Structures are given as C-alpha cells and as structure tokens.
Length: 526
Image 1 (cartoon, rainbow, N blue to C red):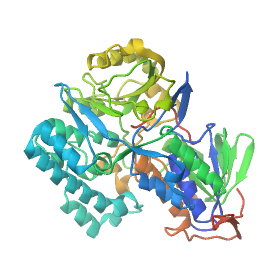
Image 2: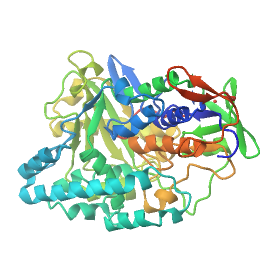
Image 3: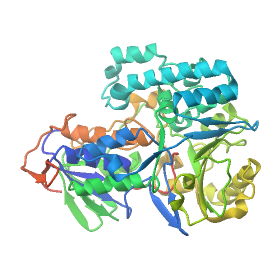
Image 4: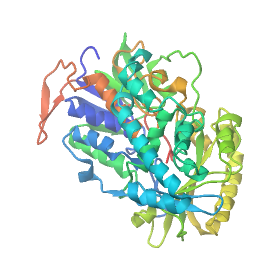
C-alpha cells in the first residue's frame, strides 16, 4: 500500500475486523475499530433472553490455530484467553431410516464407527478418504486459502498442478464417492457444500477442504459460547493498544483523490492513513463510492432460518451438534439453489450448546439452535413474504422435529428467537443470506470479489464476501490478508511517523492520526 499507513481504522468488530486489527497491531500500526453495535462479534454476537445466553451466529469452531495466529501477532495465546473444548463426537448424524452415526475426528474411532455402521469396505475407504482430505488441505492451506489472487495467472504453477493431480479440480461428490459406497456416509463428507452454496455434484472438489476441517482437524467449542472468541479477540486488541468505538455506525468516508483521509460516524470524524472495511460488499462499495464491474452479477449462497429455543427439557439422542438428514438429498439442493422452494424434506443442523456448557442456560434448562437451510430472497420467498410465512414455517419446523424424536418440543420452549431471511435482509445482507457470495467456479480464488477496489489506494476489504470466502476460518484469514495488504506480508510496510512501544509487549505502534458498519444480525452459519 503506497503512502503512510501508521493509523488504520477498521470498520466492523466482527471476526474479520478483529483478526485484521490484531495482525495490524502486531505489525506496529495504531488501530481504531469502529462498530455500529454495542459489542464485538458481528455475526458471532450474543443475545441474552430469560437467563439463556444465545450465540447468534456460528456454532462450529474448526481450525483454532488460525485464530491463534491473530493472538500470536500481539504476543498472546488463544488458549490463555479462551477455554477450548474439543467435541467428541464432532457431530452425530441421524438419518431418515432411523440409523445414526457418530462422527469422530480421531482416525481409529471413526474407522471403528464406520465399520459398525456400514462394514469393512467403507471403513477402509474412509482411511483412504481421510488421507486424501489431508493431502488436499496441505496443498491448499498456504497457496490458495491463505493467499491473495490479483490475477488468474497467479493460479498457474506447480501448486495448481498438484491440486489438479489430487483431483481438486473435479467434483466434490465424485471424489468422495470414489472412497465410500454408502450414500449416507457420502452425505457426512459432502453436506458442507451447503456452506459453499453449491450442490456437492457441482462443487469443486477443492472445497472438500471444509470436510477436512469438520471431520479430521477437530471441532471445538469455547466455554462461554462462540461469542467468547470475538470477545477475547477484542480484549486482546484493546490490551495491545487498539481503541474501540461501539455504537458508531459509519455514515461516510472522507477522501482526497484516491485516498481515504477520514472515517465519519454520527458525531465524530476520525482521521486515518488506511481503512479496512468489513461490512457486506454492497455497504462497503457504497461507502467507497465505487462498485467493481463483473462480467455477471454475483450469485449468492442459500440462506437459513434459525430457531433459538430455550427449553425446560432436552432429548438424550442429541449430541452437541446433530445432523438430522431427511430422506431427500439431491432434491433438497435443487430446491435451495435452483427452484427457490422451501425444503419439503429438510436436512437440519441441531446444536445443543448446553451439552458442553450448561452455564449457557438457567439451572435445569437447555438451549437448542436449529438451522434450516432455505433459498435466498433472490430465488425464493422475498423478504416481505417472510412476515406472513415465518410463524407458519416455525410451526412446521417444530412438527418436523417432533416427528424426528424431539417429542413435545413445542410445549418445552420457554424462550425463543426466530431469524429468517427477512432479518438478514434488514441487516443489509444482499439476497437475505448471511453466507454471502456462493463459491461457484466463477466466484472462487481470483474470480471472487477482490479485497482491493480500483480507484482507492488505501482501503482494503475483509469478510466472507471477499478472499478467501465463507466460514469462520476463511473469515479470520480474510482479516489477516487485509492486514498484509497494508503492512506487507511480513509486516514491514511504509511507516512515515515515529512509533511508540506497548509496555510489556515489545510491540511498536504508529503515532499518526486516527477510525467504522460492521455488525450483522442474529444467526448464521453453523
């Protein structure tokens, strides 16, 4: 980034913004974080209702080492601030035929479980699949996930050849089917394609790296709920010298030519040398006054209806995370991504965080989070239609859960919150989805919206809409990549002013001038 970069304003205190802030602080920049909400977290927010502490966003934490990189930038460790609990099993999969499978991330435990469930041939196939997923992750981690692409030409080289040799340019479902015969097992290793917004039959096999994160690397839960992660990141950033402005929506950016010179909030003008923008792309582009041209309009991922239910009981067949599959599969993806219909035979994610941390609910009570994928508002019911549709859909969802073993759930609910695409739309998410742009081939790698916008030389984007994509690990990496745009990949960017040392940390901060809408609503990707 040309010119001075001593003082950086980060717009939005979600996971991307907090990651960027920590990496910038570690590189000696002075950082001001501006957040329209009253707390950090963005999508990973917190709702308190009737003694229930509800995570409003992600419920699955994988690859905590990526979060730890952000803490390490300021000389801290993630586990010194957050108690991480590894989940065993990572998931419980329940199928329409009444069978169930515990998904273990340990190789021996999972092989034994698959042999019990589907026989020795699929157990051996799992070993081969696990090896392939590990090879795929190692091929992608440094060169594709943790990298910017300023041109498709950057794809060319030995890394792409290696990825192609691994089958990463084929189709996700086909690669999994090479190893597993049982259709139920194939679902366990391909349902993650929903996060990418593409059916497994059409998704690039390279995205099976998400299955590696979910089924091999381990699934974790922070004590205190997922919101404990952004809270800890904000605390670490503040301890390293960051200034936070909460309850400050950004109204505009002041510019001189191609440079942003100040961030304007209601009642404050914050001078800056550079800015990191983490709101959804339409908001970021509006603030910049520039929208990049694309050959085709962005296609967005499916959305979701989230039911947060605080209950006076629970059901013993539920693990911390339970995947409840309907009988339909390919038809479900067709409804979600093509025809825009609500799932007639839904597959659901049910999370019971109180299975791991009972303190998230009043004594003797239990918290449940039910995620039902649904079409986004570009192809399905419009935001205005959800006003009338929401109560009917909520009732049908409870009837479905009752029929799948959660008998009496409707009468067990004491506190609840329903989040629909109308709520996502009201929060400014395009197409009423918190999962942003789908990971189609035309929206992957160098073809995904870049984190730089032509015509502005000192602004960088971060978040799920830009590089590398959707999900907690990619969003954390997006903040790291945004910081590297400013500081250089090794943190040695241009500094035109003296730097001051943070006591006890040995870090230097810029002493130049100084600050951002970042929050998004309740409920998001599991």
